[in-house]
Amino acid sequence: MSEIIYEASLEGFFFKELMGLNKTLSNPIRDELICYGSQVLKELSITENLFEESCGKLKNKTLGEKLLATDGLGETAKARSLKDIGDTSLIVCSIFEESFKPKIIDANYYIEIGKIAYERLNYLIPSVFDKEDFYLLLSEELFKLIQIIKE
Image (cartoon, rainbow, N blue to C red; front, side, top):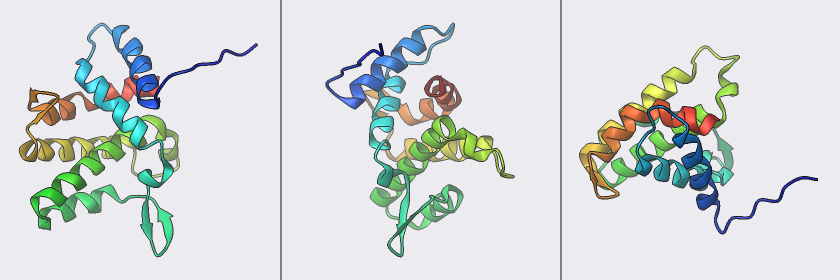
């Protein structure tokens, strides 16, 4: 008989699961990063949030192009775009890594794009969860967070 898992929220479920995995590591990441990861998982569990709409159709986000385009944006739009780029790379590299197999560009490229996006975002939003340099820390620990989500 299969087990039924009940959680009051999807984000709460992700948080509990990721915290459990994080605690098994010899060098766990900060709880705030786990909280952030669970928020991103919840947000991007809605398919429309993972893709862009173009001519009435959903298509993959081109993260490298989006990153280059942020230079010409105002501060608010730039912050929103950088967050979207980093969050999308987090999800794509942790959940959809298999989609890179037949391609020339691998997950490492997208991880680097995500790191750059979060580093730049740190200059616009330096404090999150009452932690200074939150996005800088996230960029430094991005690979570990991806590995935790992959589990």
